[in-house]
Amino acid sequence: MAAEIGKPLPVPTLETRPYWDGCKRHELRIQRCSACGHYQFYPRIYCTQCFGDRVAWVTASGRATVLSFTIVRRPVSPAFAQDVPYVVALVTLEEGPSMMTNIIGCEPEKVEIGMPVAVAFEDWNEEISIAKFRPA
Amino acid sequence: MATESLKNKVAIVGAADTEVGVVPHLSATQLYVKAAKLVLADAGIAKDQVDGLITCVSFAEPYMYHAEMIAEYMQIFPRYCMTAPSGGGTTLAIMHHAASAIATGMCDTVLITMADSQLSGLSRAKAIEAMSGAGHPQFERPYGPPIPAFYALLARAHEHQYGTTAAQRAAVAVACRKHASMNPAAQMRKPITVEDVLNSRMIADPLHLLDCSLVSDGGAAIVMTSAERARDFKAKPVYLLGTGEGHSHEHISEARSLTTSAAKEAGARAYAMAGLGPRDIDVAELYDCFTPVVIIELEDLGFCSKGEGGRFVEGGRIELGGELPLNTHGGLLSHCHPGHPGSMFSVTEAVRQLRGECGPRQVTGAKIALVHAQGGIMSTHCTAIFGSERI
Image 1 (cartoon, rainbow over the protein chains, first blue to last red):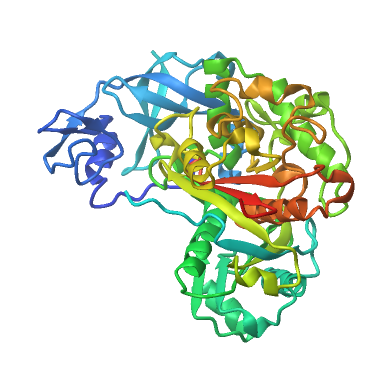
Image 2 (image 1 turned 90 degrees about the vertical axis):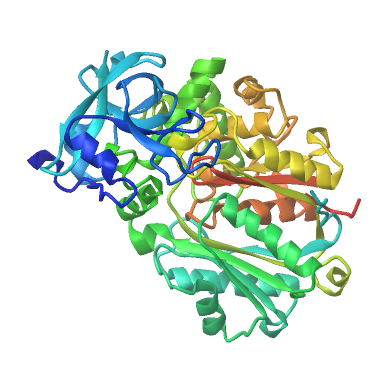
């Protein structure tokens, strides 16, 4: 956990607290519209498809595929210097929404677009765990 | 939807840049005001004739009411005063707003001055860290993406979908540097080859150092007025023929597509207003914060079909003397990139090209210029088409 000092620590808001509470339990939570069935991430007050207010929290399967990725060689800030090279990726969740993440647990050069991955949580402190993905 | 037309109604009657690159002897605020002084001289007017003022916010010297601060500093008292809160596409879109303000009579003579001191006022490391604030604080920034990483995601997707190569992206950097080598004002003027780009340090795969734009100091300004009043100014007017915007997302993780951008909508709206198409464009100044952006813009603006951008930029087609010379000043890749003002230098270059003032880098007989800018991470787009005459 000490290694994460200085990295941008997410501050949960009224709207995102259920997501971060899920991460703390190592559950990837997204929203599903009870009216039209649309899945969405990041969390919002209304459904982006039907704009209805019946959005409910569900636990995603955690399975996803790599939509695109990059291997970062020059860290964004000194806090990430120990991590280079690291993979920043966009993944598409099985339920539909996309999210940014890091691909961990494999050589960066092994990552490919379309690769199946599964969520793996990294505990940054007692309150915050970050959803990362590793090869499935 | 009502049809918007600003065609032939508004003109740029002044355009000027400060010295750019490494400018340690001027603060950010001084760069804004120096750009203003130079453009007023170009237009041949006194500061009291300005009744509209637009600036962009500065990273190095921020003020809560930035445009009001610059007005106060210059002791001018406009009736229209606006600060653009961000850069890239917004920097150009604010020109669209200024044109609308003139057309509706909100004001007669608008000064747009934009500058920053990203290198000397902030330091390279601080500038890079400040710009990375672009990521979502909860859902992107914890993953450590520097700005080049966001664009690397686009480059990789385009590569995967269309077979675009590193050498093709490099051709964009080579063309910009070639043009910069012919521009004594440019920050980086030593010509480079495709091999130089490919051998430069990898920043965020697949983007090399020379695929990335510069960190700079500098300012640029324009003066706009109605086409009727344009005749009363000293400089040869350049007319706005068409402009349009497209806005698709803020965060790249929310993009509708990684390979097709809202440049498509912005361009279509600008072409429709002007009654022109890509074949009518003599010179293009396209936003080039990273080389893959130019390739996507060329496709989305209809200069080639989707997926063909990589092949389009090969063989000197985008260089002076080629079919579509672009970024004739050197672009953000080689001329300068002080942050938010970036695309203003594209506008001032387009004006100089249409006035025929560019010397060795002049596009012979240039009559129609297209400027495109994007901001965020391919988020907010604006296209503008300018002409040396009304059409």
